[in-house]
Amino acid sequence: MKRRHIAPNGHWTWPFPVTHSQAVASGDLVWIGGQMDLDAEGRVRNAGDLGEQVTGAVANLSAVAAAAGSGLSDVVKLLCIYVNDGSVNEQEFLAEVGKALPDGTRPAVTAVPVSYLPFPGALVSLDAYAMPRSLTRTRIDPQQASPLPKTFSTGLRCGKMIFISGQSPVTPDGKLLHDGDILAQTRQVMAQTGAALKEFGAGFADVVKINRWYVGKGKTEDFEPAALECAKNFSEPGTAATGIPVPLHARDGQLIKIEVVAMLGENGAHLPRRHVWPDSLWDWTINIPYYHGLKCHDMIFLGGQVSLDTQGHAVNPNNMRAQTAQAMVHIGSILAELGAGYDDICKLTTMYAGPPGTDALAENMQLRSAFFKDPGPASTDISFPVLAYPGMIIEIDAFAMAEPD
Image 1: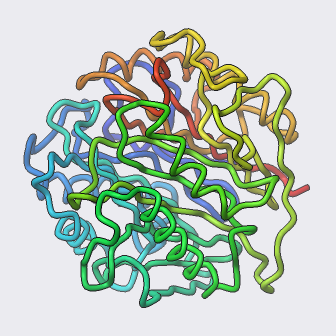
Image 2: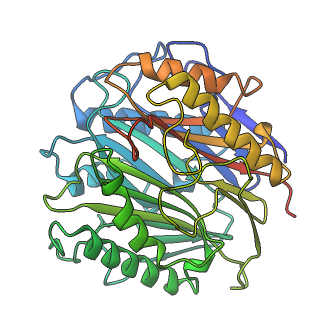
């Protein structure tokens, strides 16, 4: 499919050579990579000041959207990665982000707390999906959903796309449910998500991507129980999926947050999709119904790709270069079975384990860049102390667009 790569003149750039763009426009979507409060040389502005960095990150987001022929009022989904050591009130943080958006935008939103960002002193990174205002938008705010500032929506439908904001096990009045019980919290969150989908006439069979952000320390036993509980809502072949451990969530005792993207025909009909699992790919340590890639209409979603074997053990443990290369090869294998290739990728979201600083980012990002012609896809890059499995230190989501089947 035809696409445009956006890298505005004078905009910030990475402090090392890469092929990635700030955004890619294809079909009805603009995919905007993570925007921080950086200057044109890639230096952090307002170091340590979250409020000022929110303003700067939104300004950079606006500049990229404008260069793509879009704008902040076209944003349908925001992913807000922010540094939180337990002292930041997430609702207040989201309210600050929402105040910087045009009145009436009300996108879906997910906030994910992290220990640090790759750029020292950076406290927030915002990435976004934008879609034309000419497409009909429907927003929902079910009573049972977890609370959000009024500048955001629990769910937003635009065209065939449905975005459900990250759901937490929290009542509308802010009470945490099932304190410290990740299985009960997962059931609660999936019930909230299912209720939101139902308001659009959709269900879990219409979900094309699910992201789980759970509290964990990089151990298999952190990952497995809640992954199985979440997977009970899906039949095989299931959606593409990614599960990432975070050190904490904003509320003490909260152990899970889940967001989904779904697709539904504009006439309300379920859209057929094609699922793939190449023979060369890895597997989890448990039996869950997710597939590594699926195509629905012109959209291709891949679950997070990693360097594991068919028993879920890390291949080349703790080796960033080898694991990055293997994850990218897996991405190419999945795309090939869907009749696409690296040139069809619009966006990469890369989660990796590494210390603060850009050294680990440079190592994996420059290797990723070698798989693309310049200009390449948009990119969001998030650093964590650990990932889901011992020895696994990088996981890469890919989102692509191709001509409908």
